[in-house]
Length: 294
Ligand code: GFB
Image (tube, rainbow, N blue to C red; front, side, top):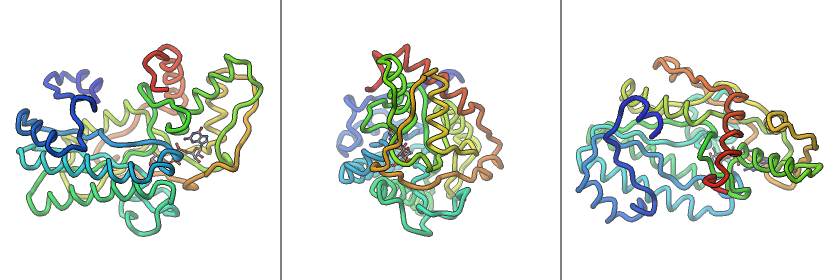
């Protein structure tokens, strides 16, 4: 977001790191909003992670996300913020939702158990935004991105998402001349991936082009199997070893392809293909190993 905002001339950015401002602490959030009184709030703050972290830390995922969004949305409203953008994730939809997933499928079936804690928190955030709009006329919009990736990602092998994890596993296997790379699960689940720069562009577009209660999906429009993703990363890294699939690890949702016709109707389309995005993210990973979150 910062890259995208600066690229379009936005210089008056209020930025705080987690160390500088703990958004789970209501008193700190109140002091910040009363002192700074921002005009617009773009919420990218959340406790996030891949399937393993979501499943292993249910309490932290539901608690931290509920606290952060409750504090920020309420303080933003109390301090006259004119527009707030809340971000969720495609895991809010039922595990076996029809594909592609329309926004109206929200709360029409059981969630994927490995991420229900995070999903419930995000659904509460959506409902809080909608309730504040109804009762107070607060201009909050909620965007539901698909699985994201790109520069600056978390590459930790336990807590990260699949794409950065496989980039790191394949890269390290290549430089160590290891014969195989292990992929979690069966390789059959399908996932849709969107580059973070495309998401930032969509957020800026909708900030100005959308002001209503219904949530809006943000996706690429196509998906791949985890096996196809791994094979794409192997070819980008020019790795000559073999993939092994560890079916003792959870597959999670069988598929999460978003219907993005509402977004298209609002005049936005993604630009960065998966192949392009993996290439640039791999280059970033190789040249930023010092700052990559490992
Ligand atoms: O990206 P990922 O962790 O999230 O996993 P989800 C996607 C698929 O990749 C799963 C498989 O089927 C994993 O089993 N996978 C294979 C791996 N190898 C790996 C690996 O090394 N690391 C990881 N992480 N996965 C998350 C939700 O679900 O999606 C979050 O838990 C959020 O709350 C996020 O919504 C976008 O797509 O399964």
